[in-house]
Image (cartoon, rainbow, N blue to C red; front, side):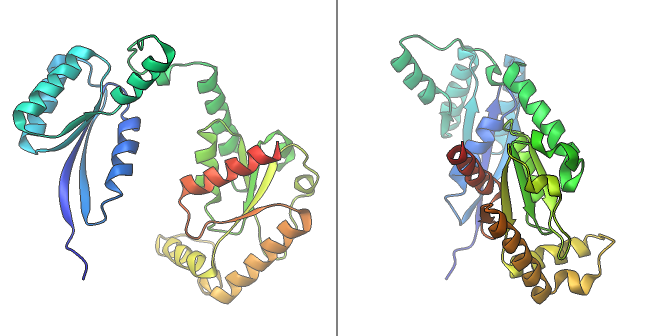
Length: 273
């Protein structure tokens, strides 16, 4: 018998965007299937006044407190107030900084938002995002050779969100739909530079996703054939044949998150280099 789901407050205090905290908090919370976190995110907390307002809110909804605040005076205030309220708290970055300091033999610079500086890596990511948005769903196929990765697959195999996730890591990613009976672009077949990966899924999964898309008021599809599992199976077989013919690897995304799919693609890219 399944336990009833419980809820708890999860407070995330950051002097930057809070992305690090959110990822850490959700990764930990995901291990508890019978408890769901009510997330309270407080980004860009850099003054004592801001922090005191946050601590008042926490006092009204007690729970677990995670923070990434490099200002040691503010960090001390969080520690003291959480202890006074009897709440569990963790400085998420501090154990990591301690390891770095021990190995490198020098203390951290304590720079707020240091991971978000406008350096060459940042602009590489922006360039990749621009490229990916311009090459979504088969657009601008003429310069496909400039891509790092090309994702191909039938409709609803998560090509676009996976492309955007990869682009956010600085990887120029294009995606091209496979339509039953329609040849793929000739310049894709002859492409030498990009890694080409086919995304597939089970017919059941694709049918379910497509049905939700139709309910979302998507136009331009003949509903019955679009969600018919036999028709989808035929589309998938066609896509697999194309990939097999050209020696392109495929990844089944049926039970993968976007992050897991992207990680598998990056692993393939590293092997192909």
